[in-house]
Image (cartoon, rainbow, N blue to C red; front, top):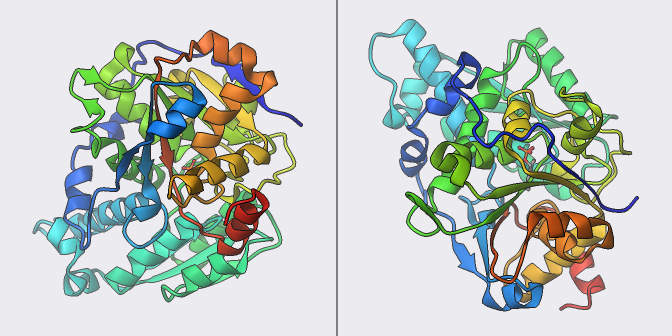
Length: 396
Ligand SMILES: Cc1ncc(COP(=O)(O)O)c(C=O)c1O
């Protein structure tokens, strides 16, 4: 299957997100929460002049989440904020005093709430983030991972002191299994995807990711003066893309940059929903096989879906070879990007080069004056495959 695309027939210039469903978007303590975490540092924003020239655009900005804490991906932004909000809520049920950012770093205070086991389904990065957060709080985590998960990703989660179960199923099967296990064992589900009856924690996770975009407010996301025309947002369950999309809609409304959602061609739940779902989210129709493991999710998150449905201009599904090309381009620039991490840049490269996307490129009006932002969302979380791809591309 080759690259596919669909412009968004549901696109709204001015989405109305004023109803109760969207009230979580009003939370405004997110960046301050992250700034209060030990070892917080904003991730770097690179301006890649040479690659922009090669691609025939004016500016190419890369926000590099490979450097987020020591976790190799952006995901701890979501897990930490969601677990903080969960504990704050638990505290409010039982104590009259405040639970603030400092309380979150206070193991003794958290112990007063009891012992928790946080449980999540994950292709790797979200599980690592939940395990990382649990360890810092002195609490436990149990992570369910799909068949075929590479050992490096399992080891990385276990190194945080968490238990990992690899099940004979997909990521979406893991989500179902987690929902069953948490009820049976009285654990706390920390899912990054929302489904019917379970939306609160996924909405906090989505909000947590908005820190990535807020951190650029002194560089490209300046008040009233956006310095970028196109933003490429990769999607698995869609929380990351919805974080970017909600940020830009709320800050710039109709003056926002064009938003392009990127998925693997065999796991394109959002593109398939846009094309075949009659306005409703449906499961991806592909084979769920891709090297972009973090994006290998079939069912759109119910909190991400309405946001992306209203605000994304163009949905693209790309073939794996573009992820490899993007990893190689990053490597040449001294940036380490794993398969899913590189997929935003891969979407840009595909849009500019793939003959099946030519019409989309022209309609979107990407020209040599265009300024583009992509986010490298992970480092080499599968180091063996990373080395294999880089050497296959004739590098190193
Ligand atoms: C590296 C990486 N990038 C992007 C994503 C997509 O995020 P989401 O599942 O919120 O769409 C993931 C998800 O795990 C990921 O691991």
